[in-house]
Length: 301
Image (cartoon, rainbow, N blue to C red; front, top):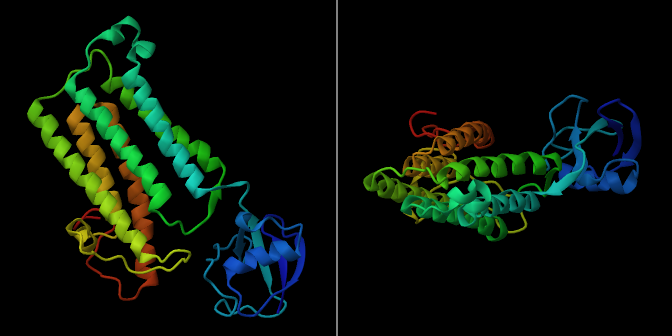
């Protein structure tokens, strides 16, 4: 069939493109750029049926969308793109450098007062922060399988500002010469909870990875596997977020640091938004999706 391709912003035509009747949107984007050189590259294209309509999924087929010869498709240009993995590596490597700078070179930040002996709690906090972001870097390289190859370039600056900025705010207070550690019982109890949540988060990421065969975009209902830490899937759709929030709440309690709690709450707010959206998509996509599951907080939300 032949489709007319237009700019979603101003309805100006890029041209007409003859395509296979059974092609899916993911392949169509590359074909459009190949045949219509004035069109954005495939990664910048968001195809839709109406100028302000909903973006079509890569797995949607022209047959499934009931498009016929002579119909129109609109392209929204997403702007400059950058790889998901590149963004993740940048936003997770930054906190390691920033936190360890405050921790290992306090005199650069606090002057002569930085020569004061660091508390055991501050040492533990530095280890926790390092373990968390090293884990994230390794997961980005070896575990995660991304459903999209790229994201808008602006996300690199936005995400890095969030992670790097909050890290500086938290580490400034935890490594401060006047930092007062809470009781040992509070520290060690919270450290245990932090470790539990980190292991739980990692376990869920492994389970999610195993749902998608390499090189595919297959989507399945996430379920617990042989690892008991994945049983949280029975209660919520996004247990990785649940564990992540738990880890940062535990870190906040361990350090009694208000900026750390602010970071935990800001992350919880954003992850709740993501979890609710994923939960809705799961229920919409899978008719047999468990109705007793919540999005992120068991029995609550």
